[in-house]
Length: 257
Ligand code: NAI
Image 1: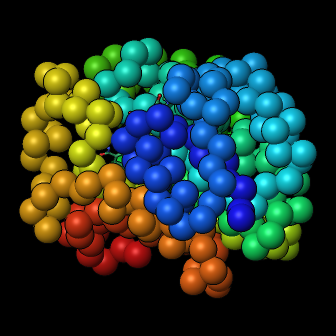
Image 2: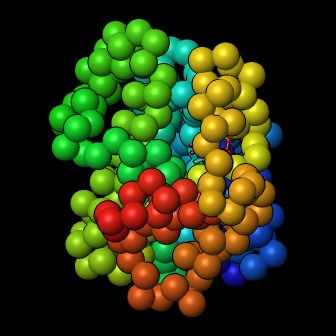
């Protein structure tokens, strides 16, 4: 039975992914702020290190799978917190757990990014240089100083950078024998989306964000894609971003892929 670590396991896409992975035969170790096997806070470096130590202690330093789903939406204040969880909560765990994954059986990892990752290209991402340098303080200052635009910048900028971070690791992880991919959901019915709908700054944009399929996703539809990417049927899929967005990305960027 593969042992798979899953962040954000207590809610939304993470909770659906926990159920789907268990149904596919994984032993899942969930990480979240509360209601999880390992309770920890991915928004600070100290919190991430504490989570890593607990994971290594619980698994004996061997992992077969890693799914990084924990994330915060654009409505969160301060906006810098979304950058910390969405970007550093991913790259610190990727880099900290690669040695454990290398020792696993048919190891694989999936990062839950977003369709928003493609809407702010790296070349125009104001957070790119700070995040590439691993400068959490500077990235936080940029978004917290951006006024009303800070939330959207934090969300799209961190999601763009996290997809880039996965793609930049493709050679190292490939040589280590660990597959690594991202899933980019469109609008999914979860508490995160509901929180955005209740915020007057974002409600209209979310309502207008209608995919060609004409509806939002159920979290189980994202979970099914994560399970596919984690499993043997995806054995040659590495370094890719799989959009699960009802056609949104193709509609917005038909000539870019
Ligand atoms: P959610 O709010 O239902 O679940 C997110 C989980 O992350 C929660 O259980 C929360 O406690 C956990 N989390 C947040 N901050 C944390 C921290 N500091 N430390 C540990 N855990 C923390 O949200 P949802 O929608 O299920 O989001 C999951 C992922 O999917 C996120 O990365 C989100 O950006 C992404 N996504 C969601 C979309 C949507 O429309 N719902 C669209 C595209 C991407």
